[in-house]
Length: 121
Image 1 (cartoon, rainbow, N blue to C red):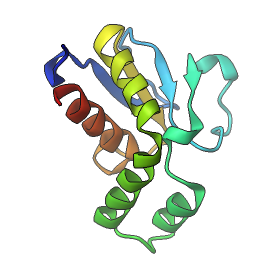
Image 2 (image 1 turned 45 degrees about the vertical axis):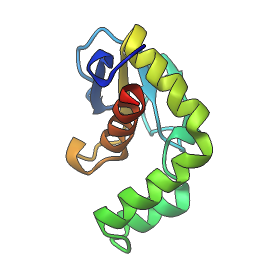
Image 3 (image 1 turned 180 degrees about the vertical axis):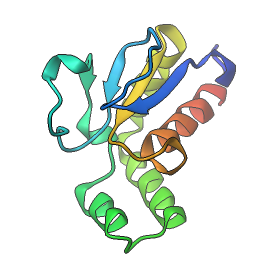
Image 4 (image 1 turned 180 degrees about the horizontal axis):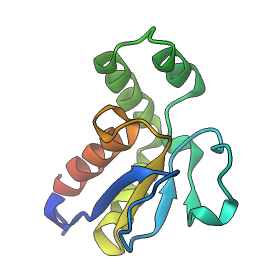
């Protein structure tokens, strides 16, 4: 049985990834400009927010709290992938990467929290 404390999750921008030794998982729908394919170990675009939601957030049409709730709702249809990422976090560890938003207002922090919740369930 795993618990949230077993989850090793690093967060970072794909443009400036942390030095953590965990596999690098890109969680963006669109491939980031200027990033080589070898810069990440795996790309799971469906773990990123929908383009519609991300575009609305980036245009300041959706406040952070609404974005967070809507992203979590989108992930409910992909819990199998969230659980896969949770298994990665509790075995090898995982580095969640996306664009350059700060961690506190980026979907990678929301996904990390959901992974920890599911690991503790």
